[in-house]
Image 1 (cartoon, rainbow, N blue to C red):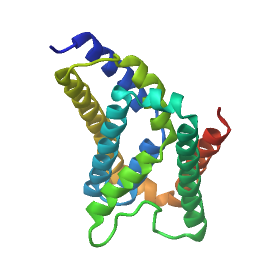
Image 2 (image 1 turned 90 degrees about the vertical axis):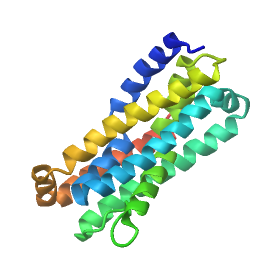
Image 3 (image 1 turned 180 degrees about the horizontal axis):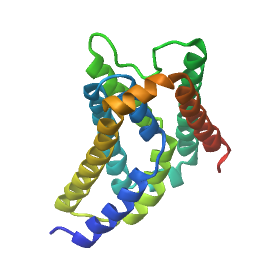
Image 4 (image 1 turned 135 degrees about the vertical axis):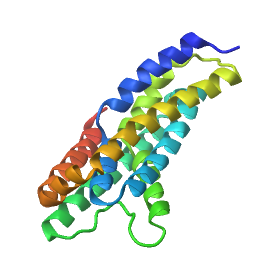
Length: 207
């Protein structure tokens, strides 16, 4: 039996969590404006896969694990924050150096695979995603769900994330937006880098 109420609740919570800009939004927008639509969509694929992983953990009780073993939550928090600081720092350094290479891989041979991996790495180290799924999403999901309900919840996550981040990728990859990005690349990279670094620092300072 499918719990439609639980699915609707998860949908409403997840839509809000996804639309609020965070490292995933910045990373995909940057990839779309600086490379190709295909690479940006490949990065979206990696992001969606990790979202499905976090959603599965939340539904199965990752919040309980973090509560029972707070050191695991702390380790994940520190690792994610460190990655965001490194990620944003690389953007700023490359912008100052005037380089064309973004810290998100995805050019040359195997660029689609590298872009997909970039989406995985960015999201797996995203403290916003971890905190959202461990707290808000897990609270919205019922404690005990049937297999059909579980699969429907994952389908909701896959569809919402694919549609939203795919929309971001396509919009920022349009010639007009991409051209504006190239004209102001140095400053845009600095701003994006500063935002990501601030998110990492905030994560370290937040209890």
